[in-house]
Length: 296
Image 1 (cartoon, one colour):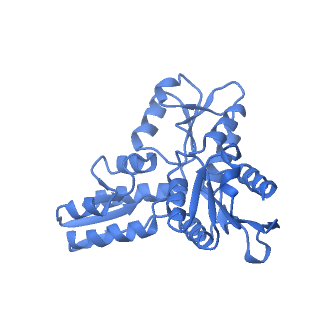
Image 2: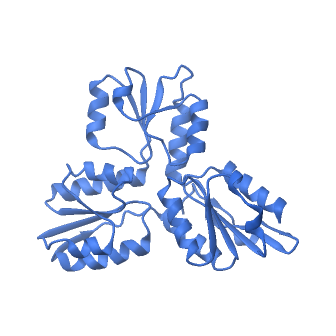
Image 3: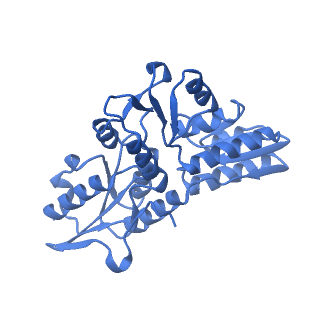
C-alpha cells in the first residue's frame, strides 16, 4: 500500500449529511509517496537568499509551487539561469545530461526524482543497453516521459495510442516501459497491439500502484454519486486522467481550488464525490470539502 496516500476507510469515511446531500471523499486521493517525498526534500533544502531552485516545477500543482517559492525554493527553466547555488531535480526526473551539466557548472544537486520514475528510467536504459527496441507508453509532452526517453540515449519510440502501436514496424527484440501515471486500462490495450510486433518482447509495467489505487477509488465513487469534483492542477496529467475517468460515470468538474466552485453545480444533487490527483496538497482538498459542506 502506498503510505503517501490519504486513506479514508469505509468505517470512518468523511461523510456529511446536510439537507439530504452527502459529501464523500474517495478512499485514496491526494499526495502520493513520490510527491510527498519531493516536497519534503525541497523544504529541507530551502534557502532564504534565493539560491535554491527546482529545475522546472517540482510537481504539477501551481499553488504548491507558489507556496514553496514563499518558503525559499524558486523555479528555473534551465540550468543556464543559475550561476551558483543548489538545484533540485523535480519529481518527474531528468535525463543524464542534466546531471553532467550541473556538475560542470559547479552546482550543488539534490535529486527529488520519484523512486517509481527512477525505476522506469533505469528500466528503459537497461532495455536499450540489452539491444531491445524500447517503446515508452505515455504522453509525448509529459516531462516524465521525456526524461525516460533521454535515458535511452534518444533511441526509444514514444507511443500514446493504439493507432500508433499498430503502426509500429515489427522488430527483433521489443522492450516496453510505461509512464508511471498512465491509465492501466490504456496500457493494457496498447500492449495488446504490441504483442504481434516481436517474438522477443519484454514488458515492464512501471505504472505506480498509487495511480491504480486513485483511479479505482475514483471510479468506484463516481458510480455512487450524482457529481464528482476532481481537485488538482490543470497541468497535472494524473489529475486530468481522473477527471476523464469520472466523467464516464457522472457529471464531473476538474477544479484547481475552492474558488472555482459554483453554487449552480449543486442543484438537484444528492451526493457529491471528491477525489484529487497525486500532486494535490491536503489543504486544498480540505478547503473544497469544507466549502461543499457549507453549500450542502
